[in-house]
Amino acid sequence: MNNTIMVIAPYWFEGTWVFDDESVSLEREPFVSGVPGMIDELVQDIPDARVGFRLTFSVGPFPGYQRELIWVREEFGGHWYRSEDPPMEGWLCPALFKYFNEPPERIYVKAEPKEREDTTN
Image 1 (cartoon, rainbow, N blue to C red):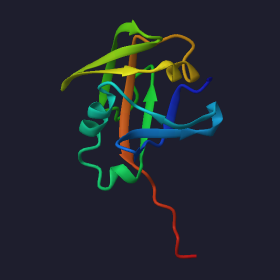
Image 2 (image 1 turned 60 degrees about the horizontal axis):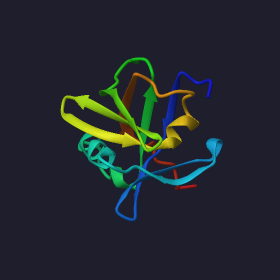
Image 3 (image 1 turned 180 degrees about the vertical axis):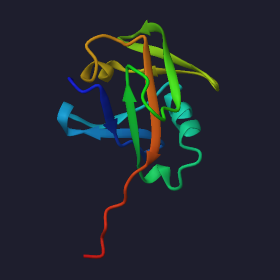
Image 4 (image 1 turned 30 degrees about the horizontal axis):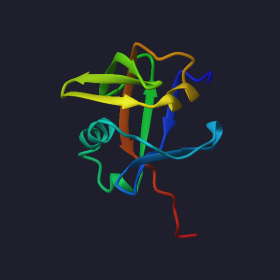
């Protein structure tokens, strides 16, 4: 992808965080192996986050980013990343390559409430 900053909208489904992204042909793509706990920590102050929230991510820092994820190692075609504060590790599956040509050394992330659509009309 050519975007410097990307956005997905994770939500809770069948006991884990998942996301859809039509632009890269992903539907209910699950986060696994440590990443659900990382997301839980990231969204702890977002009301109703399990209904959906906005996750912004980039290979470079951007204003307001919340966490820096640092590449650790490759395993099973995916890649492990860690955060230092709080100290956590999680595995990003090969869907990572839908967004990056190669695994970035660092990924910067920010979680925010999703804008709710006006349903009064």
